[in-house]
Image 1 (spheres, rainbow, N blue to C red):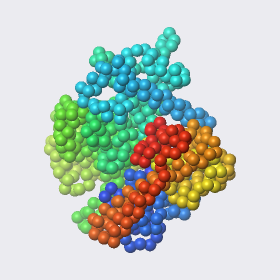
Image 2 (cartoon, helix red, strand yellow):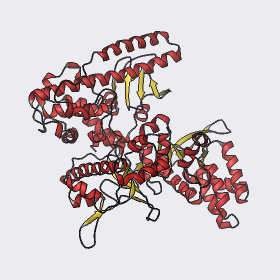
Image 3 (cartoon, rainbow, N blue to C red):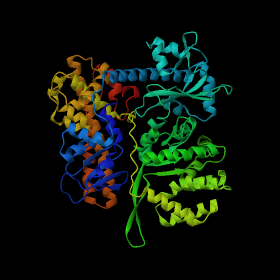
Image 4 (cartoon, rainbow, N blue to C red):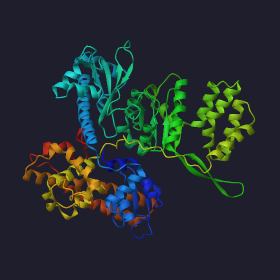
Length: 631
């Protein structure tokens, strides 16, 4: 990932702009008086889903980089340095070793994707996969879910997958590095996974980074396996299903964590697309960090046994460390206000029936799952019930341990009445005086007073979500101009306004010349530009007439996509105007929507040239998304 993408993945535009402008929630978006021109009615809208802003009064728009550049009057390199410092990203040119490692990562991504497609075809079409298909049908997994998650089957052979990959040019050492083979003691290699159901694990960009597998024969042990640690795969850092859940998590404002692959599959199949699962391990800091980019609200739906309860308690420690704390104003009896520290987020526990997991609950009765989500309990409620059942409260040591576990959660309850209620419950539970609990609580608060928790170290290996169709088209468009600088002379004046990413706008404004000559690009953008050229290398081998056709196709699609985005924004403003009774604004939005709809019909987006089949996976038809391997 380039430093630019890394910075964007770590910053939330709502939080950033909110530090400069008072934002007010308006549906799924936020609005404010525009900081770039004088106005009395808010027309400055921030869209968290797309992480950009747009003023319907003066027309300014952009992303986090664009806002800082306009607000602080900075050039792009200065804005990048400022935001990188804020995000904890170190800016430096890649070393030769890092460039080599990046090439290896791309090669392994291609290998994993080829493996996933082979195993998927074995499941869907192979005779050997019949038993696996029957098993999935028995578990209630639909064909749509099977294909959407690229489920696969590893044949009961020692070399089925490795033979397939070798035929496609991958060497034994590459297969070993990817974790798909194991070395024999006497020499040679054999497939790591055999006669097992395959769950490809994807990162946030949609790249297949590893595999989770389930035994088809109950005698096979262990029942569940993961890929070993590889340059792409760290089971403590990825969450199964997050690539497909990220948008829903942001949209619904919460993430639901479950334990198993089938829990995720069944939840998504029934429309609960904000569900993810850790990879069979305790919840890790980098996993919580990944979720924190999309929401501050986590629902834990873990097994209802003792081990599941302990996993919940351990997970709370990690969540508290990553989420950090915020200052909460608390009125005092003297009419003053004091500030207390509280968890900067919300965590609730979804209580499951004994012996049943989310997969079984959803299959049996989706409405029961819906009810349990609605009745999810605050963590302190859950912990007190757990302590009552599992702790040895007959001894002084057991009582002290119970208070130690509950006290940090109790300290985060800032409402004095609610806190008093829980102090009373905890005192009753451990059979001590309420004053003793209250004294311990005061000591805890004194130790915390005036102290901010150190921010969690950023996860430097984190990935950004799968690029949108707009970002893919923009990326190819800019790569085309970098590869053929003379094309810049043929750009229309409005080309700059069609781009949504600030770094692409900056690249478009650089002088035409032979890339990557030092004077052509800002130093901070050189790595990003080289990355675009590398990503689209296969699609840039064009002659002059075809390159000109590619430019025309890109411009048409960029215009279409920009118009689509603007149409969505007009629709949002129309709804807001109707809710506020602003008839003048509502009529204006209706007029703009009508004009823009007519304009969309006139944009030439039909394939016209022989170039089209080569670019289809990048450019797509309007309404389509690019294929993951085209990103």
